Amino acid sequence: DAKTTQPPSMDCAEGRAANLPCNHSTISGNEYVYWYRQIHSQGPQYIIHGLKNNETNEMASLIITEDRKSSTLILPHATLRDTAVYYCIAVDQAGTALIFGKGTTLSVSS
Amino acid sequence: GAVVSQHPSWVICKSGTSVKIECRSLDFQATTMFWYRQFPKQSLMLMATSNEGSKATYEQGVEKDKFLINHASLTLSTLTVTSAHPEDSSFYICSAMGQGGNQPQHFGDGTRLSIL
Image 1 (cartoon, rainbow over the protein chains, first blue to last red):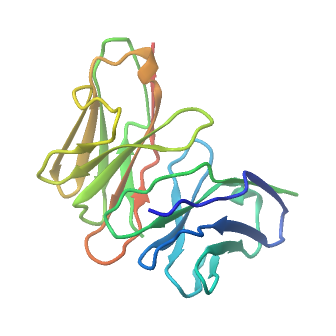
Image 2 (tube, rainbow over the protein chains, first blue to last red):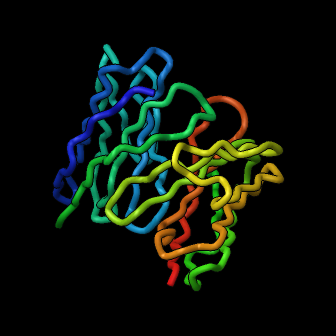
């Protein structure tokens, strides 16, 4: 599976949009980009995933560049409860284990 | 939405004890479940892949005789830490995914294991 690179930490003001980047320059054509987050002392929570097209759900939006080498997770109106470690993972098929990198620690402050 | 339940959420026991952790998919059937371990301030590390009705596949460096995995039904996988020692103290997390399509994996809330 393609390796992903994320900034170690980011800060965001409450109520503002949080844009979390992820670089996956070696991603292959059949690999999906998944985003999870982990709030302290809990299991990871699924956020969103996509292959080529931009995706949106009730939690976030996922913007994937046309060449698929990078993506951005957007939390439109960050709240204090969005403070967590966010993981971007590239996976080639269903049933494959997720390999977690170090992720981005997002700190949302008032 | 898909729910994965893990039990117990927290356990403290003496060195040499065996501890069983259960992972259940509550509203879907999971042919494949995964077990992870997370040490403080580190990321999740995959321990093994658990397939219903067959032997688990362990990652390199994970002792299969120490971490026994059983996946006897489509909704339950168990991880038994045998003869646990203080160095086995960690946060153990399972995940499961439903059948069919490119479904996301859903994680349990983890089990914090402390060996005295």
